Length: 305
Length: 175
View 1 (cartoon, rainbow over the protein chains, first blue to last red):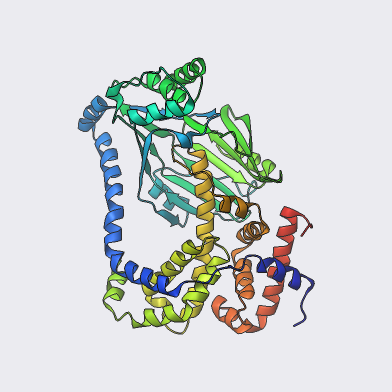
View 2 (cartoon, each protein chain N blue to C red):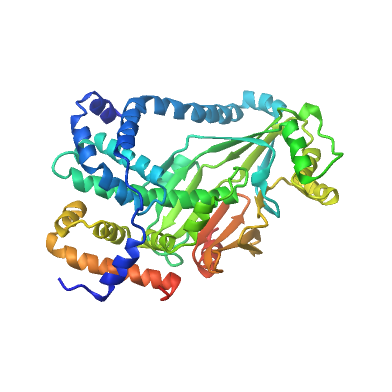
């Protein structure tokens, strides 16, 4: 067969991704043997956090238990997004994520509904043609524990002094329940993720506003601004979307059918658009729509109910 | 799970022999899509374990099944990685380490562009291009993808066209 004009071009480009390392057969065999023998334990280990999450949900679902649960925890629904110019990866909270860790492929929307507990919304084929691959992930439980010593260290790093962190906060746990998350991947590199609003729970009587102020200050936010942010957060807790100062991202506030949204454009170091993501919150759903094009992303986000 | 129980009790000799014969090539195939050697090796092991727990994949079509599954596993992993990155970025409750210099370098290079384009193509085109670039013969490609040998040449040609078209659409004609 005659080589076509793209033969050399494709070969040259595909040669770029040839691994520059050699697989290690000895390590591979050791890993295979370990996995063969560990296989049965693996499932048991995964089942523990899943069971713990299920118990938590179950306790809240049974009316007799609900009052008891409310005695212990105060729950907030996070149905809005707030953007903060902070790098929350430097948060002094001790974070522990519990999930079954599995991304389950499903065949159709009905199966997704059975797994996720809600019927996913997808745009019509007129807006976005093609059949998506659908997966369901989670639920995910995020536990964040306050460590007073870590918060004091964070103040020292931020160069802030004289702020009191009550000792009784030490060991207090904040919980956020996320998902299940339904993800639809379209052939045109479009991804739609959706989930019900997240839920945050704090111990009953915990002074959320005061804590939020101290938390923001530990992240280097000046006192007056931390106070404003803390008041907003305590009045209507939000999912905090942080934009670190070094991120190559621009952000625009939008509104679709009366619900707020953010358009996030990510760029590569050469200034080319890598990806456009719209995060949109309604009372019933949080959507994240992402594609390589701003127009396509916004069109799809608008088309969702 | 019932299948797993059956195979675990069985003689693992077939697994040993297919592992020794194909581990390196399967890992290299995955390594074209996944940047990280350690992760590529882990995924290769997963592919062999999956094969071991899938009796219908045993027999004369075992090799084809292995390489198809390897490519799909690598593409799924890459998609998961991208999703995890976006997800972790968006859900800031997850503590995300700053990118290593190696990661930053990888993102800015042409390798990453090639992988991104392969990810965006129809899966069949990606499979053909990966196998072709890994020097699989036409016969091996036909057997792996379960297509007629006489079609392989034109399938490769179409995949190359799609690859170039998508690459130029995303990154221009500079390269």
